[in-house]
Amino acid sequence: MRRPGRGRGPGAGAGQARRRARRRPRKPWRCRGPGARGGALRPGSGPLRALSARAPRGHARPGGRDGALVPAAGPPRPRDRRTAPARGGVSAGRGSEGAQPPQRFDPLTRELLDRTRTVEIETTSPKGTVHRVPIWIVVDGEEVFVRSVRGERARWYRELLARPGAVITRSRRIPVRAVHAEDAGAKRRMTLGLKRKYPTSGASLVAMVRRAILDTTLRLEPA
Image (cartoon, rainbow, N blue to C red; front, side, top):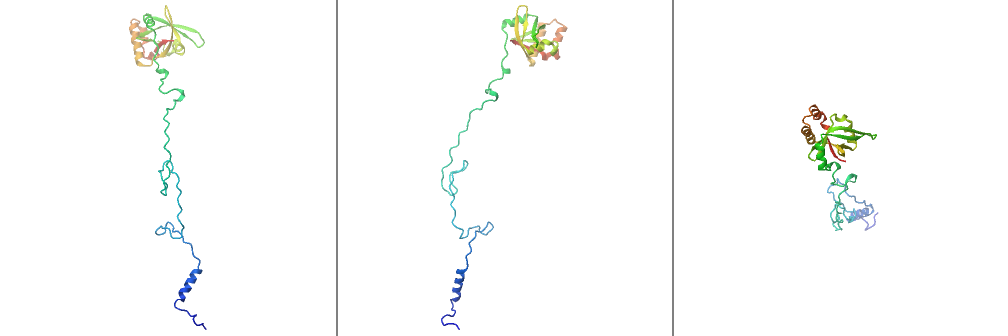
């Protein structure tokens, strides 16, 4: 039998609901994932963490991601514009030895060789033996030329290219060294000089202007 005043009134149900709510444990709120609708943070996720203001990299602009101004990176270092040394210890712009102008005989020596019909070329073998052979010689301007009628087989030709020699006239011994006359103009001047100096030599002249031996044309220089 119920006591008077203890019966259920109109507000009894609401009071019981509040008591049950207080006893029921609260579940923490969760942040919605990337697929959640709206993409916003729900209450209970805690305060936003402040971002640290770090100095920008060399390629970043002044200012952190949170808007705070930070000092910019220092000015770019100037590039080293010094010229690198050339390889092999040779300074840039220096010409090679092959580009040096050839040495010339003095005018009196050139005149002597021009009027001498036949000279002796003196060469030395690897063992030191001295050889002398009579040859023709041509002077064209400031240049002095010789040519081997036997081509590269001639001993004097090989020895004169390997070591300095000498040109022997009746009155003088002239030390010389030989270099290849590789340009076509020099070979042509040598041929014209032979025809001008030895016009009556017949078969010997023909043998000296053959195409097969043009490459044995040598330019003589003072040794």
